[in-house]
Length: 487
Image (tube, rainbow, N blue to C red; front, side, top):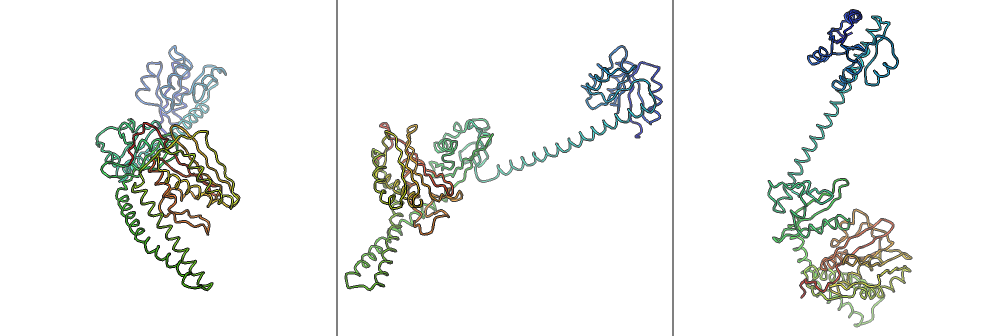
């Protein structure tokens, strides 16, 4: 039994008080006595006892009511109620308000010692558990604070820009790199303000719109001084979204130099390729060829034609990216779609594929280059035919919504792996699961993307492995008041 634990007796009955004092002294407890409410409050103010034993009546006051009040102030203080006569109803009330135990006549020293020991032991266990929980919770909270501090240091020191938005596109966090890119002063307090109010950049507005509806989570932000940022929009459930920014100005310059180099080389290759093809075609005119020679001539011709097609694609892509085909006119899209599909009918029939065409009653006109738009459709529908097995399904759908024409070209082919989808519009890129024997240069979709960009549109892909692929193109409809310059 621990010594010197203080037990406070709140009694005004001198008859039972000596019995409690003897019992507690025999168990090595220290004892303090308060014979009225004022003395009780004074004693509790000076020190908190290990246990309070209070009589049913104290100085004319109700021991139960006093105990209920004290438990509000000292919720961990064990209080034992002494009854002058056993009363099950009073016992029930005492336990209901949270008292630890009740003592009633006949009293014995042993029963007093046992009740006191049990109450103090239970209070100590509760106290130990509370302290453990406080330490555990505090340690967990401290760990979270440390992790948040580390994350804050990382975000503030990385070279890439980071903007965290709430669900209303108000800024929650913007790191120094993002402030620097958009010319925002370091000391400015930006939290809680609308992103587009602080950064009224049209490319950012487009990213917020397309990213929010999951149509195009990646975009580029171009500045008047030539800088280009790659911007990635990532939704964060329950918070809003994160925008990460990476300066790709240098990569854009390298890509431009590479494009110029490829364009120059491709242009220089056309003349010798034409000459080779011409001389190969003349071989059959200078005399009869053996079967083996005919096979060799066929292989050379096929190889030169493949290289010529690649060179032509490179030159086409270069012209589109350079804006040489910027002249635009009012175009009835329905006519271009019908013309393209009719030209593709023989291929579709040969592969026993089923084509579903779904067009609205009226499709608004577009402002664009008819040759390039037909080239875009040729590539998209041609790819759908090429990558769909015999007997598969194709569909071309057009929808008009909010001043935009939405074109969907879908197939039931092999699908595009998720890891390949972000790169599918890159030059020379081909999906990792392209079936053997299916040819291609990897430039078709890059050309499509450039055509769409030049028509102020957007394109993205949705695909599931083994189920098929859908390319979605969104183009603005023609408005008579459209004032975009044309040449």
